Image (cartoon, rainbow, N blue to C red; front, side, top):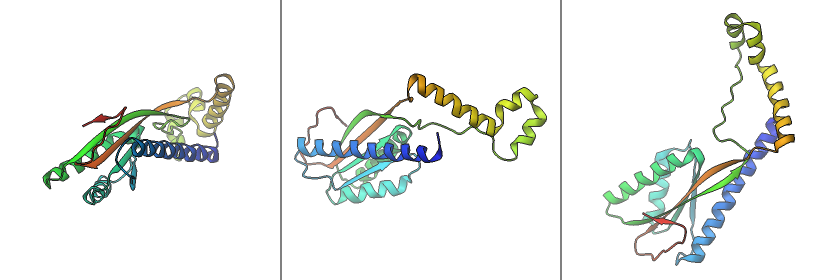
Amino acid sequence: MSLESDKDFQTSDKLALENITKEVESSIINATQIENIEFTITITKNDSIKKRVDQILGTLKKGKPILIASRSNGISKAVSVVEIAKQQLKSQNISILQFNRLSKQTSLINPNYKNSTLIEGQEDYVRKILPDEEIRNLLPQETEERRTIENSIKEAVKGKKEYQLPLLHVLLVGEGKEVELDGWTKQ
Protein backbone atom coordinates (compact mmCIF):
# COMPACT_ATOMS: atom_id res chain seq x y z
CA MET A 1 0.00 0.00 0.00
CA SER A 2 1.43 3.37 -0.90
CA LEU A 3 1.95 6.10 1.65
CA GLU A 4 -0.73 8.28 0.04
CA SER A 5 -3.39 5.56 0.09
CA ASP A 6 -2.42 4.75 3.71
CA LYS A 7 -3.04 8.40 4.65
CA ASP A 8 -6.37 8.28 2.79
CA PHE A 9 -7.41 5.24 4.82
CA GLN A 10 -6.36 6.94 8.07
CA THR A 11 -8.33 10.06 7.18
CA SER A 12 -11.43 8.05 6.29
CA ASP A 13 -10.99 6.03 9.50
CA LYS A 14 -10.95 9.23 11.60
CA LEU A 15 -14.01 10.52 9.73
CA ALA A 16 -15.80 7.25 10.46
CA LEU A 17 -15.14 7.69 14.20
CA GLU A 18 -16.34 11.31 14.03
CA ASN A 19 -19.53 10.22 12.22
CA ILE A 20 -20.21 7.47 14.75
CA THR A 21 -19.66 9.94 17.59
CA LYS A 22 -22.09 12.44 15.97
CA GLU A 23 -24.68 9.66 15.72
CA VAL A 24 -24.12 8.86 19.40
CA GLU A 25 -24.58 12.55 20.29
CA SER A 26 -27.84 12.68 18.33
CA SER A 27 -29.17 9.54 19.99
CA ILE A 28 -28.32 10.96 23.44
CA ILE A 29 -30.09 14.25 22.69
CA ASN A 30 -33.15 12.43 21.29
CA ALA A 31 -33.39 10.04 24.28
CA THR A 32 -32.76 12.46 27.15
CA GLN A 33 -33.48 15.92 28.52
CA ILE A 34 -30.02 17.01 27.44
CA GLU A 35 -30.54 19.80 24.92
CA ASN A 36 -27.13 19.61 23.33
CA ILE A 37 -23.63 18.36 23.91
CA GLU A 38 -21.38 21.33 23.34
CA PHE A 39 -18.14 19.54 23.90
CA THR A 40 -17.03 16.16 22.58
CA ILE A 41 -13.45 15.00 22.85
CA THR A 42 -11.74 12.09 21.20
CA ILE A 43 -8.93 10.65 23.27
CA THR A 44 -6.07 8.84 21.57
CA LYS A 45 -3.15 6.93 23.04
CA ASN A 46 -0.86 9.94 22.48
CA ASP A 47 -3.00 12.57 24.24
CA SER A 48 -1.85 14.43 27.33
CA ILE A 49 -3.75 13.21 30.38
CA LYS A 50 -3.50 16.58 32.14
CA LYS A 51 -4.80 18.51 29.11
CA ARG A 52 -7.79 16.20 28.70
CA VAL A 53 -8.61 16.16 32.42
CA ASP A 54 -8.56 19.97 32.44
CA GLN A 55 -10.93 20.06 29.43
CA ILE A 56 -13.34 17.70 31.15
CA LEU A 57 -13.24 19.58 34.46
CA GLY A 58 -13.76 22.95 32.78
CA THR A 59 -16.77 21.72 30.84
CA LEU A 60 -18.41 19.93 33.78
CA LYS A 61 -17.87 22.89 36.14
CA LYS A 62 -19.89 25.01 33.69
CA GLY A 63 -22.73 22.49 34.10
CA LYS A 64 -22.42 21.22 30.54
CA PRO A 65 -22.40 17.52 29.63
CA ILE A 66 -19.36 16.10 27.87
CA LEU A 67 -19.03 13.11 25.57
CA ILE A 68 -15.69 11.31 25.46
CA ALA A 69 -14.89 8.99 22.56
CA SER A 70 -11.94 6.66 22.17
CA ARG A 71 -11.01 3.77 19.97
CA SER A 72 -8.83 0.68 20.21
CA ASN A 73 -5.50 1.42 21.84
CA GLY A 74 -6.75 4.82 23.12
CA ILE A 75 -9.41 3.28 25.37
CA SER A 76 -7.08 2.70 28.32
CA LYS A 77 -5.97 6.36 28.20
CA ALA A 78 -9.62 7.49 28.08
CA VAL A 79 -10.51 5.36 31.11
CA SER A 80 -7.56 6.85 33.02
CA VAL A 81 -8.56 10.40 32.07
CA VAL A 82 -12.19 9.87 33.12
CA GLU A 83 -11.21 8.29 36.45
CA ILE A 84 -8.74 11.09 37.28
CA ALA A 85 -11.36 13.72 36.39
CA LYS A 86 -13.94 11.95 38.59
CA GLN A 87 -11.50 11.85 41.54
CA GLN A 88 -10.78 15.56 41.20
CA LEU A 89 -14.49 16.39 40.98
CA LYS A 90 -15.20 14.23 44.02
CA SER A 91 -12.51 16.05 46.03
CA GLN A 92 -14.31 19.31 45.14
CA ASN A 93 -17.69 17.82 46.20
CA ILE A 94 -19.07 17.93 42.66
CA SER A 95 -21.30 14.98 41.76
CA ILE A 96 -21.65 13.66 38.24
CA LEU A 97 -23.34 10.81 36.44
CA GLN A 98 -21.36 8.57 34.11
CA PHE A 99 -22.76 6.50 31.27
CA ASN A 100 -20.62 4.10 29.22
CA ARG A 101 -21.18 2.42 25.88
CA LEU A 102 -18.84 -0.05 24.21
CA SER A 103 -19.31 -0.81 20.53
CA LYS A 104 -17.13 -1.61 17.53
CA GLN A 105 -16.02 -0.06 14.27
CA THR A 106 -14.82 -1.80 11.14
CA SER A 107 -11.49 -0.49 9.89
CA LEU A 108 -9.01 -1.33 7.16
CA ILE A 109 -6.15 -0.05 9.32
CA ASN A 110 -4.52 -2.21 11.95
CA PRO A 111 -4.05 0.16 14.91
CA ASN A 112 -1.29 -2.03 16.34
CA TYR A 113 0.83 -2.20 13.16
CA LYS A 114 4.53 -1.65 13.71
CA ASN A 115 6.77 -1.23 10.68
CA SER A 116 9.41 -3.93 10.94
CA THR A 117 11.67 -3.02 8.01
CA LEU A 118 15.32 -2.43 8.77
CA ILE A 119 16.46 1.13 9.29
CA GLU A 120 19.58 2.64 7.74
CA GLY A 121 22.81 1.37 9.24
CA GLN A 122 21.38 -2.02 10.24
CA GLU A 123 22.10 -3.69 6.89
CA ASP A 124 25.87 -3.98 7.44
CA TYR A 125 25.31 -5.50 10.87
CA VAL A 126 22.77 -7.98 9.51
CA ARG A 127 25.15 -8.99 6.68
CA LYS A 128 27.85 -9.88 9.24
CA ILE A 129 25.70 -12.10 11.45
CA LEU A 130 23.25 -13.82 9.09
CA PRO A 131 23.74 -16.22 6.16
CA ASP A 132 22.95 -14.90 2.66
CA GLU A 133 19.56 -16.64 2.49
CA GLU A 134 18.31 -14.95 5.64
CA ILE A 135 19.73 -11.59 4.55
CA ARG A 136 17.62 -11.70 1.40
CA ASN A 137 14.55 -12.15 3.57
CA LEU A 138 15.34 -9.06 5.67
CA LEU A 139 16.66 -6.37 3.33
CA PRO A 140 14.24 -3.41 3.20
CA GLN A 141 13.82 -3.03 -0.57
CA GLU A 142 13.26 -6.75 -1.10
CA THR A 143 11.04 -7.03 1.96
CA GLU A 144 8.88 -4.07 0.93
CA GLU A 145 8.61 -5.32 -2.65
CA ARG A 146 7.76 -8.86 -1.52
CA ARG A 147 5.23 -7.54 1.02
CA THR A 148 3.52 -5.46 -1.66
CA ILE A 149 3.23 -8.48 -3.97
CA GLU A 150 1.99 -10.75 -1.15
CA ASN A 151 -0.57 -8.17 -0.04
CA SER A 152 -1.80 -7.69 -3.62
CA ILE A 153 -2.29 -11.44 -4.00
CA LYS A 154 -4.08 -11.72 -0.64
CA GLU A 155 -6.36 -8.78 -1.48
CA ALA A 156 -7.19 -10.31 -4.87
CA VAL A 157 -8.12 -13.63 -3.27
CA LYS A 158 -9.66 -12.60 0.06
CA GLY A 159 -10.35 -8.88 -0.27
CA LYS A 160 -8.94 -6.29 2.10
CA LYS A 161 -8.50 -7.36 5.70
CA GLU A 162 -10.95 -5.71 8.03
CA TYR A 163 -10.31 -5.10 11.71
CA GLN A 164 -13.05 -4.82 14.31
CA LEU A 165 -11.91 -2.01 16.60
CA PRO A 166 -13.53 -1.42 19.99
CA LEU A 167 -15.09 2.00 20.55
CA LEU A 168 -15.77 3.48 23.97
CA HIS A 169 -18.11 6.41 24.51
CA VAL A 170 -18.44 7.93 27.97
CA LEU A 171 -21.07 10.55 28.77
CA LEU A 172 -20.46 12.66 31.86
CA VAL A 173 -23.29 14.92 33.09
CA GLY A 174 -23.81 16.92 36.23
CA GLU A 175 -26.05 15.31 38.81
CA GLY A 176 -29.63 16.51 38.79
CA LYS A 177 -30.19 15.77 35.12
CA GLU A 178 -32.60 12.95 34.45
CA VAL A 179 -30.83 10.67 32.01
CA GLU A 180 -31.79 7.17 30.98
CA LEU A 181 -30.08 5.66 27.97
CA ASP A 182 -30.80 2.28 26.40
CA GLY A 183 -27.68 0.28 25.60
CA TRP A 184 -25.54 2.32 28.01
CA THR A 185 -24.33 1.29 31.45
CA LYS A 186 -24.63 3.72 34.33
CA GLN A 187 -21.71 3.94 36.69
